[in-house]
Image (cartoon, rainbow, N blue to C red; front, side, top):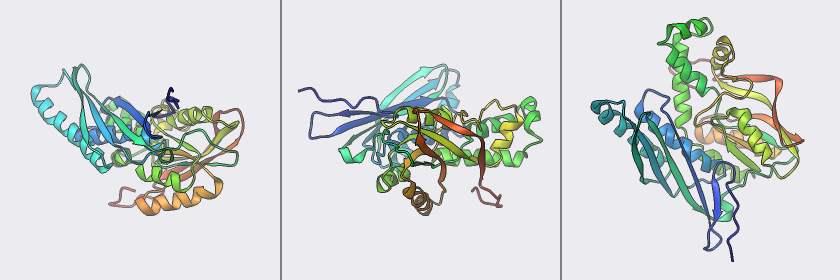
Length: 324
């Protein structure tokens, strides 16, 4: 008898196996470097791949493969320094997630790329399909937005024409701090959030990456069994990134929800009574906030941001010597 297929899921494929009610959960992702530190880039790439598992409520990864494109434009000396650091960062992040990198593929390529494949075998109670949102649920986001703006603003410090556009809205010091915050956020695993999804009876989730918070909310809404829509009221944003986004003519569409994020947080549908305890516990366990950003209402499986969303600066107050 043929084994039924759950299908591609949302962020990971979930395939029932022939053996004992187990399912194979698998995902892949790769992209170009976006930060200057090769070691941090390796960690970000690995965390980004793992987020696809975590968004399905999967907390354990059994194996990782690394996909690496070594740029033909690098000198031999550059390659010998940069590539081992990227590989080490990727592997260290995998070890932090409780698994190892056992293989992969390396190619020569005009552009440097890094990514991987994350694979795990799950029992039915170990994953949460992203399809059961109910009217009255609350939307929670586990990382602040603004990573694309932070990375670009940091690059613009060396581009006088670009810097001219934003220098009146932000200091060089705050651009550097925003960049550090973005890196710190991108390397952080969503594993704790995935674990708490089970404890607080999450009805589904997705990770916020390249399509922006509204793009991913729309994809998640489209995937729901019930006739629901998502409405986002609050946008937690890395401090000063909203000001930068406005100053450069809205090219990022940050407050419209379409600014690309890399290794962003999970956007989770939770029962109304569970949302505040979820946020409280993740802060207790990780020392990082999560935010209630919207609601689930009756609708046609779409998502929207209200006309004037509340922008929450993260952190609200700058403290000397502290990142957050």
